Length: 411
Ligand code: MLT
Image (cartoon, rainbow, N blue to C red):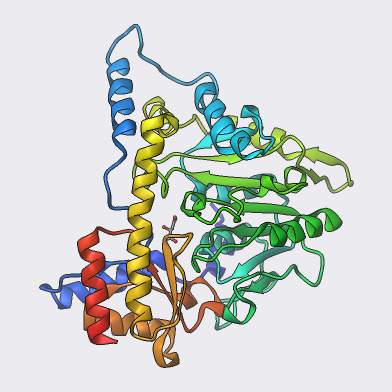
């Protein structure tokens, strides 16, 4: 008889974005003519940069010839030419000491932030997350047994929640007790807020003091426009000793459907065995990667490489400017109505306080029914997200302008 992993039974019924899709499709069945505008899940809408398309076309042509055809890759870690470009353009150009062999190319940051738990002891580590938070961090810890059950607000026993709300200016304070694993995501999903070098430096100090590991999700770093805001945790001294960083081409080059990302594990980051011996997390992840993964396709890695060409850089910049303009239109449209808005300046997410303190899900239903707009209820990201609501700037300009008009009429 096959026994199931009963930790799954502790999870709340549906993954947040699946629950939203379910509600929207129920609404659509009853309102077939509704012209729904989706600003819920952060999924890109604009075509891939021309430089990426061109690179992938020629990679497809290579696969069509026996002489240039490729089968399995020698190294599932990612091709050297891509990892060298990442190290050069994303790290060394910012003064970060990261080498190509510390980079692992993968199919996404969602899977990497989840799979990293494979190399960390289940049921042993005390985990801390900001609240609200990207639900994957919590759910994957539930799945491997790092938590107890949840209360009515969705908080799991055994997890340390660090509120990030208007009250603390969306700056997470370090925990008042030792924790083993800390998830930080900046620019932040869902609040669209950012933190400075000084805040990150405090986290690095805390991690050094307690031997904690920081899992730093920088999937939205390309949206940072403020020159004072760090793009990588490795810009801060000591970051190399305590942090793993996750990056993705999904929101920068529009690869949500193409799939390519990477994870950086410096050789200097370690974890402890039960006997107290320090071991390299890089070697463990390498072992895990080579066993469970055959690498991202050659064609897609060529597409990702093109992001670093002069044309690719320019086209990615234009793409991001486009979504940041959308974010500004949403932000300003809401502000003219007196709605309190956060984020959306160095990030593609606008985080608003629900008018008249209605609950996040009530506001979701109100918007859907009265304006046919879909957003994401703040409480879906955690108890401290109650009373907030997220709008994604990922859509075409016409829909963003229409969304602002509809909100202004209905709220
Ligand atoms: C979001 O909407 O929070 C993100 O698109 C989800 C993701 O990147 O997996």
